[in-house]
Length: 296
Image 1: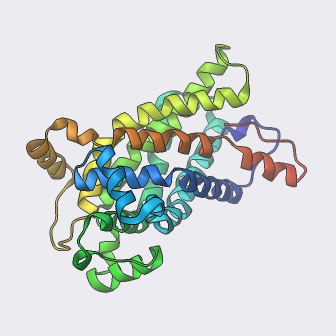
Image 2: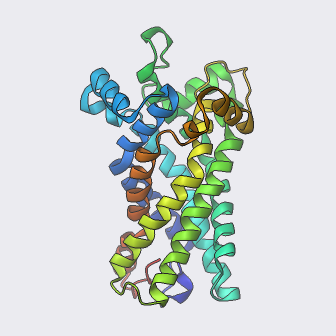
Image 3: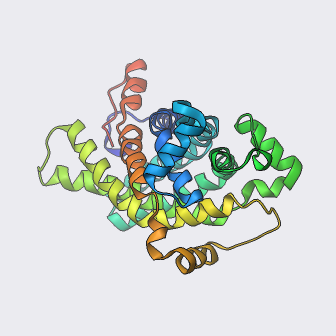
């Protein structure tokens, strides 16, 4: 959020709070797409088969399997990454003026890496809760909720296993946030400067939708490998991100790295729109009777 151009300064703690709340709202709306994406990556099935399997096993409610994990992930990961990014962007613009795309991309990567490290435990739990759909009853983990899952992993696999797959998760987050946050900010400036779109809400929507295409395309191969690593049942088995990607290409073909692209983008696009349109910032500043902060 380009707070340096605003008439009122949003406190740092509010930037983190806004990021977390908007992330929770976005996750609630788009969680079914997350469930479909994970199911396709874990089971190697088509979108149609994934939909039928989930509905057959758990009905409509099955599309919200692992929601507690998704929400807790937003409270940790998204709160951190958006708060850090908005703070870094604000500091950068105050000291150096308008930043170029490479710098914005770099700030997004930095925020993503830091936020993903915080959110890795909840990411693992959500993936495992969803993956249970494809396991026979005797092999399911049956986490009651996200906190139960975290405690179970800590107790049965060890504290540090909560960060299983942290490196691929951080690598994915670097690409996702660099592409999403950096591209969104730059696109919005470009569309606004050239006068292509004058309506501010439409401007934000267009920037979010376009940046989501870039984000989804460049990040889903890493996301697929990360999901497979975090869902491994053997806690002693270790496989690097590059090793998992090579294994997928060798056994399933290169295009399998983009398995689940449609639900991935279908989640990423509305998630970006909901997260980036700063209605919560406007509400926050209005409550304090301050001039509204200029939207991102």
